[in-house]
Image (cartoon, rainbow, N blue to C red; front, top):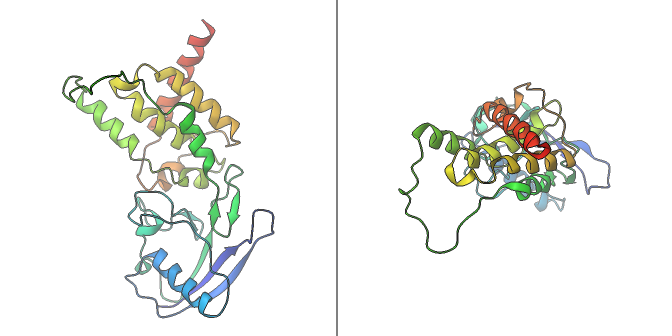
Length: 249
């Protein structure tokens, strides 16, 4: 297979960026998207050119590092799939493919396709923890958890922090990410002590990071590689309101 790539190249956060065209041939349909970029970089380096910078780590859809806009879609054309799990057979032979970084004020471009997503880390640091008593660990069966609550917690905990929800949202909101991190602890007994304080702290930090407001457009859950529902946002909003009332009383 062969493709025409239009790749965003930007030497640094201060430099002006632009789309640069590359033609790539002899690509196997079974290659992953990142493997295809590896081939492009190998050929660039053979010609003495600077390779394309992009984030990657596990390449198993777990770490969330492979954050790319592909033809205007976060993580590409496959629903519920991270970029590293997209294969070149998902594209037509000879197709033009646009590859860009996440576009959000809170995600400044570092170089080429790499963005700084540390804003998401700071949201977790603001309240993504639980109280834990010292001493020996409790037996897992001592604290019963209803099946529905356990499943809801696990669904929310599937968030890999890639930021696709932000990139896909017209407002560049981080509400789905923040709601997932709040909900997966809030559904469990261990997370009840900080439940409302957690919602207050994490939402306030999200606002400080210059993310946009949520209008429940719904594009975030469509772009999420783990298909996390916007129902978590409704739960976050309820907890946030209750935390406000508690602070004012």
